[in-house]
Image 1 (cartoon, one colour):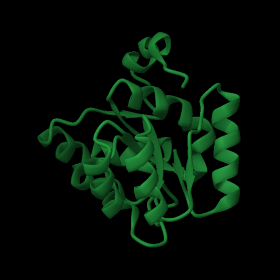
Image 2 (cartoon, rainbow, N blue to C red; image 1 turned 45 degrees about the vertical axis):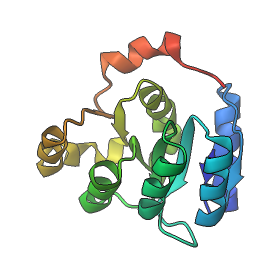
Image 3 (cartoon, rainbow, N blue to C red; image 1 turned 60 degrees about the vertical axis):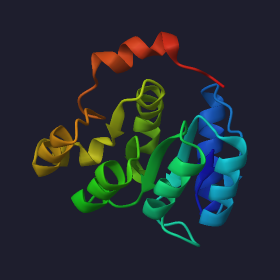
Image 4 (cartoon, rainbow, N blue to C red; image 1 turned 90 degrees about the vertical axis):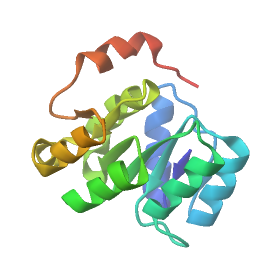
Length: 164
C-alpha cells in the first residue's frame, strides 16, 4: 500500500514497485483513507507519508499497528532530521525511514529488510544512526540496516523476497 498525498510521487512509486515485480494493492491520499484501507486489506508493507493530510504519519503508525498488526510500515519523508527518524522508528514503531530523495536507490533494500523484519534507514540519514540515535536504537533492541552499509541479511533475503 502507498499512502502519500502527492499524486505524482504516489504514481511514480507505484510504477517503480510494479516494475520490480511487486503488487501495489491499494493507495491512499490522506490519513483517513490509509487507516481504512490498512484495516480492510492488511497489506504486507505500507509506504506512509510522514505528513499526511487528516492526521500525521507518526500518529497514523500507531493506529495502523492496532488495525493491521502484521503490516510493516516504511515511513516516507522529505526530512533528514534525527528527531523525525527517532519519532518514526523508536517512538512510533515504523520498520523503516525513507527520505524521498533517496527512494530510487533505497526502496529495494528497504522492502527486502522490511520483509525479514529488519529496520532500514535511507542512505542520507545513515550518518545519524551512528550517533545518539544508534544508542537509542540499541537500548530498544533495534538493529538498523542503512543504505550506506548493506547488511548480509538483506543480501540473503533476496531468495525470500516475496513479490506479492
